[in-house]
Length: 204
Image (cartoon, rainbow, N blue to C red; front, side, top):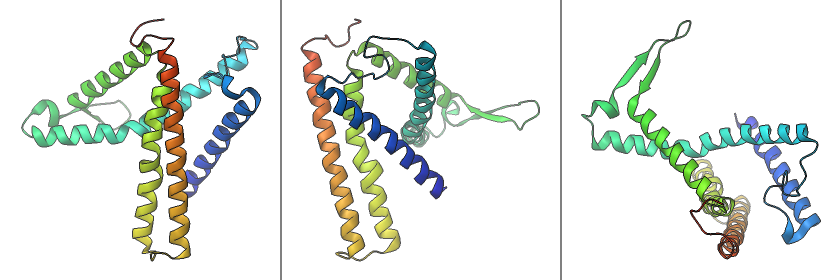
């Protein structure tokens, strides 16, 4: 699992850095939000379709990974608040021919469906949704992806303070914090710029 995570994160980082660095090197501040269709041409259409399919596959997986902690928190809190509610706590066994039965929880089904509908609806109404996603990503990246894992690693391995390894990990953490702050500032600037042109919560 450790090697799989290392490889996947490394490959993802390389591709994101290539897109970001080469896109900015080629177009500067005029780089489009969507590198696939932002230039006004749609040929070869089959290549763009394959790229869009790859994006959908990536986002479906990423959406699940980043939403699971929220789902778990809401479902755990609801079960603690309403322990006697059958709607929240009861699992319905759904038999699947050829496989073992699936435990269906109605609260989980209803609330997750509503969450997806609302998030999709909001993303459709906001013409500058990518900037808002950038802000949320910048705020979530450092604490969830860098700070907590680094601190847990230090505590687990009992790395002494001010040792070479401890200093290196803190430098990594601070560097990623600076990158997150810069990304958040860029996204805020994008929202301010877009507000001059677009009206929020209005179809374009």
